[in-house]
Length: 585
Image (cartoon, rainbow, N blue to C red):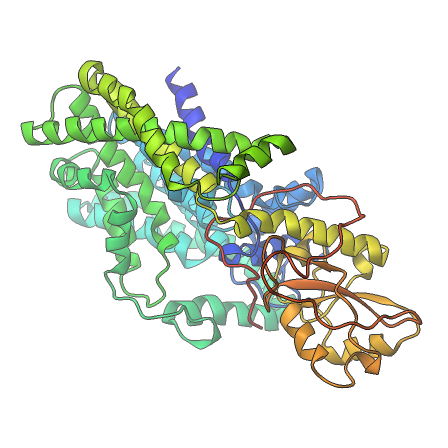
């Protein structure tokens, strides 16, 4: 029964991720998706994004490409490694908690980890963070079991997933553990010389042939990942300087409110002789790795959320058993009651709107909701919050007077889980939630009008979503090629950024002097076109038309005619993502 609970908790983040609005333009997901497309096109050794060298080693790309070969390539199969890694990471976290703490602490720790927004977000991202966190956790679990070969093998797999991010944290955690315990015998048992050979051998199996067949791309990848990112310099430098302590502070802020329990957990387990000291060493060593490199991204510390959740879970487990100090007991009694109140609010708030996301509403229902100011994919009006608050008061009263500590903790965890769902479903602006389906309709219409996705001409398209939907990983054409196609006797269907379209439309003699072709379809709905948005036009041929650029004022002006082509399966877009994200070349 406990294992079933762990499995269900481990699946929850992936469920929230799949139900959340997503698109491939957010957080560089499109680049990783294009690597999968490159592998399926035959570039298994060094998958590229339209000729640009990869920024990460290829292990996750290979796994996603193998899944796509069996299940078909779409925006779900490229995310499959992250989804599977999320479930496995929950199971490994429980195994580590049982080994170093106790079953109750392990179960509560997994629940804390599974209900974090960061876990839900990365569980359905085409990113490398979830898989590398799994390898880090497996490596330290093997170390705790006394299996040095398993430890080094997982370190090697982590290095093949995300380079130094898979190599540094587990080695740093073990180093902190061995140094604090002054365990020279443990260092010998770890067999570091064997480990160097295992990690080097695993990496060399890919690096040597990759350098032999693709020396230029491998050199570019090393310069990008090991030099530009680690030194925060070059063309791929992250924006803005961040102090060395940035990720340490961010780690504790992202774990709130459970990070408030970490000082008590550190007090209990900070002695090197404590069985759970490895969890403390995991956090300290992992954060230490990221203190000094100038490139600091919040997701870098995700692999350290597992030990933080397990340590916080140990404090909560002792509280349920009545072993917490009086001050902490009063804090947890009041805090869980507050979160129980939040559970009622978010249950009433998130679940109906999540249902509206999953089940299309009849048109009459939509009109009724819009008449009172409420519509799907948008923030509800303020009075809805007041109504939900009043409805939740009986729940708050019941939990305050009659609920046990265990029931209040369950309600608090439910509040956090539903908060993730509410954040994903409700707080995404309409344009973000609509962008993914709009891109699918746009790609489907472009492919139908051109007579197939391989016949669509991509002109200066540096974004990812539409090329991926068209299964196109080739280089885009430039403006000169667009002019040649505009003068050709046969028509071509061209996808290009709206900003480029308007600049060409303002130039006399553009489009081979035939006049500006009208926009047939656009890649966004519900808002005016912006420079980075994609549009579809027909150029060349004896029947090429002439028209100016469509108006961009409010009220839906400039929208394309309805698509006549078949729709592609829809998948939501990432909340808070910027529209029309591009890639620098």
